Image 1 (tube, one colour):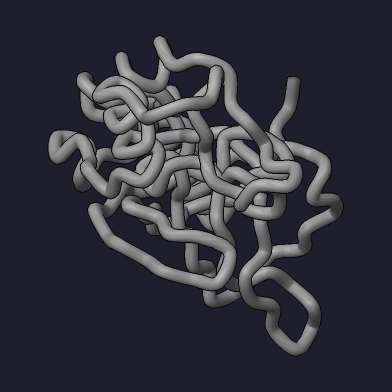
Image 2: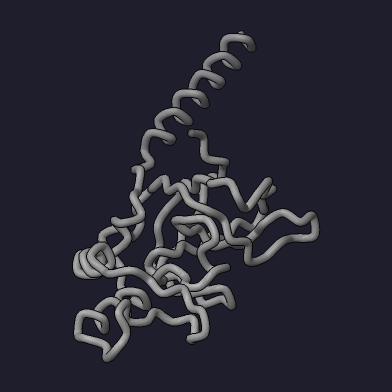
Length: 180
């Protein structure tokens, strides 16, 4: 009897875990951008990464900023979000930018960003392309150079830290290395 109950419980756990894992929707980073900003950023010109000027985006060819350049700058600093993403269970790959560690040196707070070096180099991604993640139990970050996947519920939440501003957060169920 005990073996049968144990087997049934184990089967139930495996099945509910598989069903729960299938509930996550794969989210693309571009889906985080409202339509107008997505089109503006996809159609922008080259980015000036600084040099002797301040670390802001400069007109690609110099001179006065045109209306379209102002639109590009507004898109790069936008905290506008896609409200329909709130409360969705998603799976999103990206790179971890650690913000806080616990006493064991496990990461307990981080930004998830779409490309390596974001928030560390200039210019940072737009706030609606930065995801704030808080994981009180922490996780061991093996390398900032490797991508991770965060699975959890999207929240619309503005978070400001020294390294950047995020317009979204994810309440994580899992943070795991990305498998290619």
